[in-house]
Image (cartoon, rainbow, N blue to C red; front, side, top):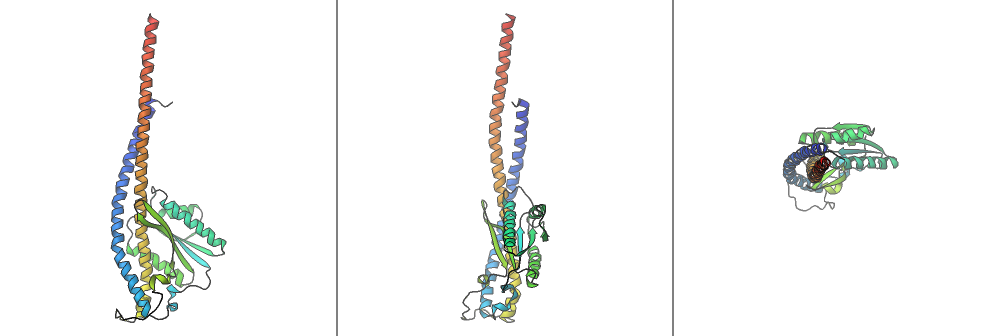
Length: 292
């Protein structure tokens, strides 16, 4: 049975832990608000870019001529990009991404395809290396405050892999931000760029709404890599917000668990104190009886 000193020591330790988890919850909430603001600021730009590209696709030449839109006849090599956070204490946020990437890698190899793994985030890098996976390229230190330059570097590397023919498809596995309490794991193809994302599918020439200089083909070709950059930048922001939301929820649950433990320990302390007092009274009574 635990002594009074042991119970008091556990109460003090739990109280200190609760202070830490409460502080981490507040920090995560503040970071989450900033991440949400950045996502909302990016959304109009991303929507306008897609609309412009759809308009350009209507007036440009045959889309099969664009490398980033061209589907390969035979898919031999697939690049899997695992986008995780740089820190832990965020529930299953990082583990879900790694688990999905590992399952996708096994499935692709079972189909006879080669797989090239790319990792973004310290947690994903560490876990995949611990499982003895070879990583083609890594980026870390981006999850707290991702910048557009980071997305450009990642996009340039992936576009080069695809254009050079080293890979036939690029898939991105990351968490999509739904709300502070919900993050949706996604596995999307970013290369080749899905045609439905940048074309209207019908190619009917209606009234011209824009005047392009130089021609539509040249601008469309220039915008395709920018579209990949925007897609990756948006994924970085979504992942950052998801990480903070997951951490805020995890720390809130930890604080609530600490509160429940404190209630249980306080009750145990009171019972132990009462038992000690009762034992002392019995010893005094027994001593008085012995003295007659």
